[in-house]
Amino acid sequence: MRFTQFFIRTQKEWPRDEESANARFLHRGGFIEKIGAGVYAFLPLGLRVLDRINRVIREEMNAIGASELLLPALIPKKYWEATGRWNVPVLYKSADSSGQEYGLGFTHEEVLTPILARRIQSFRDLPQALYQIQTKFRDEPRARFGLIRGKEFVMKDLYSFHADIKDLERFYWVVSDAYKKIFSRLGLPVTVVEAAGGDFTKEFTHEFQVLTPVGEDTIFYCAKCDFAQNKEVAKVSSGDGCPKCQKGKIEESNGIEVGNIFRLGTKFSEAANLVYKDSSGKEQLVVMGSYGIGPSRAMGAIVELNHDDAGIRWPKEAAPFEAHLVALPGGEEQADAAYEHFTEHGFDILYDDRADATPGEKLADADLIGIGWRIVASAKTALCGRLEIKARDSRDAELLTPAESADRIRTSFHVR
RNA sequence: CGGGGUGUUGUGUAGCGGUAGCACGCAUGCUUUGGGAGCAUGUAGCCCGAGUUCGAAUCUCGGCACCCCGACCA
Image 1: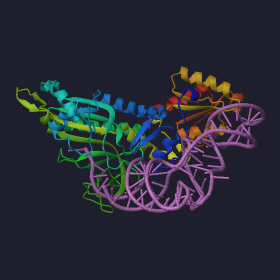
Image 2 (image 1 turned 90 degrees about the horizontal axis):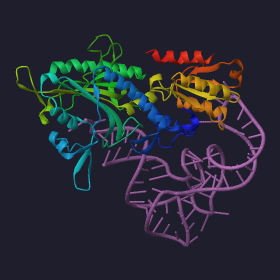
Image 3 (image 1 turned 180 degrees about the vertical axis):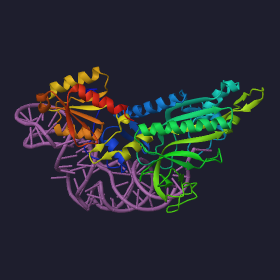
Image 4 (image 1 turned 90 degrees about the vertical axis):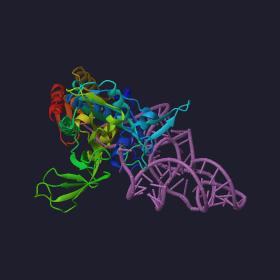
């Protein structure tokens, strides 16, 4: 993609009304624009990041046998009434010109469960796993921290349907492993935290928390093992000995919840009469689980964890492009040729071909936008027929031929 | 929903009762080119509504919006 043909506008100044790092960097880099508190537009560059994150999620969801679908955000009142959720505080309500009332989806058990109820008949139809990636709406009393907590946000929600609790339990941990892979690929170190089960279960649910000071949750975790609990349910506090490994001390941190997994049980299948016939011909309630990831929130969390003074440092699989090619004075022809070369070999490159931007401006933009690899063509590099390639998180550049550069980039994407 | 803060061109800001200024951007021209270039000319603004005053960006009252702390967070 040529810079001159893509809609990118970076800003030199910090926004006056944002304090969180994710909002500040994403605004300046031209990834997002604030429309209102907790409501952001994703500009082309930001949408690319979101798409890259979603691609990783889709790959891992498909790998565990989940099927993608798309449910409506506009959900008639009767669906909410069926489960008693019409009056939950976070539900945005609206009505059409004929007086029909709707709630905007903040989660989708109400819509999906009836769909399954019409199609699941036998134990042979189970288990099922269905997911979607969609905009959710929640009337949050206080949106904050840029993309971390919005009134409108992107969510991947997965729902699973099982013949019994044992099968739900099996799949629950399959999803947990898939989530670990997703966050690892996205460069987000997560701590799996025990948390409250809400109304659905007395057992713990599990949250995937990124430990960082801007997080909204308070997490107690063991420094030596994987024990971690949300403050809501914690029976430990800072300084205690770890109840699990007996060795470590409990520490405290804020966390951003980028994912969660719930055992729903039969609450929603009861409401929708979602039943199947078991092998003896007897009707049984389907047992459900639900599993969420917030791609837009994850995007914010990635920036919180990965930036320096100059800009963002996207992990490879979340970056809007695979490499950022910069043409400096005297290197224009070489850069054109390199862009052709990379594009022909299937690379997704951002090529800064601006003729009216100074070298300093282009290099500063490259740092701000934060793509993992920067490739520079200049009068110097044109002389030796090589390109200067530098990783965003490194100070050192190398001079490589276009073919060697391509190998370097390709290799970096295969390392997990 | 309580508390604190902030609203001035596209962006960031100064002005705090008397002609609204600066930087960046943008436009035009010339010069520049490895870390957000130089000169010249131009462009564009006081969140909304009442009130006080000869006169309000500035003071008062009432809204609205955004940020931060707390409450809340299926």
